[in-house]
Image (cartoon, rainbow, N blue to C red; front, side, top):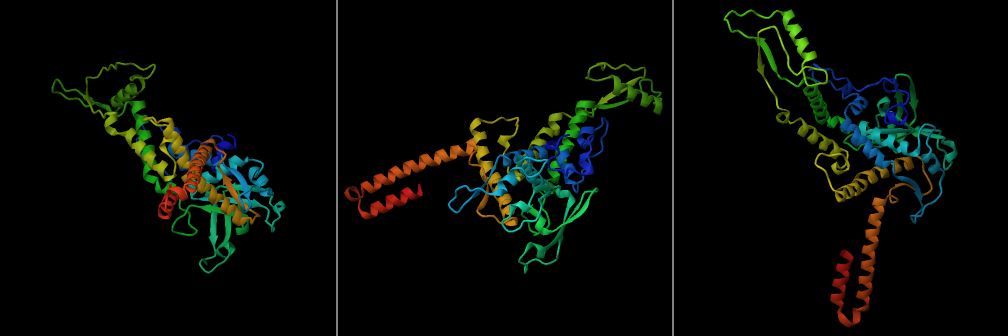
Length: 402
């Protein structure tokens, strides 16, 4: 298992470092009819178990990773700054893209993202910060001072951050940690969207378990009983019942190597109890729950695989919408938090204008501006000979609003 596969988890955590880690859905047992137990206090496990949740969270993080770090001056021009090298190569185990993904995944799953600055920032001296590490949010605890509204500094509100991953226990000062969190009612308590999505995630996993039973065991087909033709009913012994069950479960079915017809020396009667898969509406339930998860994270259904299909134009417009309404705001929040923690000369931004899909918008805007400019020039040239002052003012106002 390489580092990329462990994105969003602590590199040194005993829970996820093991090579033989498997999410529970990979070990559904045939014949297991118990309800799935999901611990929503262990959000990392929920992330690994629910493929639909993981797909949306990772897709959003992938989009964010396409952003380019820039430092701009007051006029919006790019300028050199040592922080760019640090952000593009934050630590020995992550690239700049992986770093951004890890921030996004932690924030999406836990409602928090913690970035450790290996070194203390001194004025404008970037040399003091050697590395940036994204901590596993599940291992971090915020210790408040108990004071909030009358304080002027983060250190007056937050006493320290505590890391406890079962292998390591350490304390960090507020100056060492950059923290991003989901916006909620409380100032310090995380607001994980995953906990809000508990019904949808549970329904998806339960639906997949039911479908696995239908595929493996053909569902709840019916029951066998001793047929009473003579009027002298002799009950089947427990051993006989067990032998027939094992024989049918092992030898009879639609899989390769199984018999299509089952024979028995017992006078048995079969009573069918059939649940039609379409009547259970398992596929519809999963689709509905998936859409709720997608909406919660500001993603778009057209950018993911779908049974209904979509058009190229829909995909293109959906991608623009997600970048503009979800990815860019998240990038602004990350850049703002980093800049607030490390005062810089200039403004730090995570820029997406280089993406072809965004350049199309710039081309469209340029075409619109060209048309407006030509219309304005025509309007100015025709002022004295064609229109009176009121007409000119109305036309100019209409042009500006267009």
